[in-house]
Amino acid sequence: MLVEIVDETNQVPMPYQELVEQVIVHAAKFLELPNNRECDVTFVSSERIREINKEYRGKDQVTDVISFALDDEEDDIFSIADIATEDENFVTVIGDILISVDRAKEQAEEYGHSLDRELGFLALHGFLHLNGYDHQTIEEESKMNSLQEEILESYGLKRDK
Image (cartoon, rainbow, N blue to C red):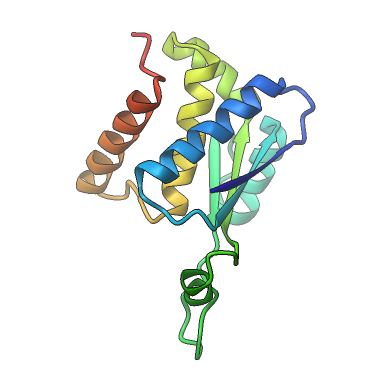
């Protein structure tokens, strides 16, 4: 799993960026995803994530994380996903994760746990969305929450409370 990280805020120290990358790589192994996948993580301000949330989701409010999955499985003669499956050197970008640094800091304080835990959680939450997990129904939410906790715990980012 390849992870590209961009810090638009210039406020996220390298150890936090490395943690986010490591959590996503760990999650990819946990989910047994092929190594030739890539996702991009961008740290943004609350103002920027609000703009994106309004433009793409129709919600004029700040949120903590947004994911944009790239779905290459269309009714074409062949798909990029098919090529990636056959050629392990062909890297497929699965999508983008945007994390509000401001909201991450606020939520870490609000929930009484470390910023490490909050950033790891938000990155994982976004990553699971890129891989088809959702929380639109009670069943989906329960499955996604359980998986998030299992992956974070196996990585070593347990809840402080």
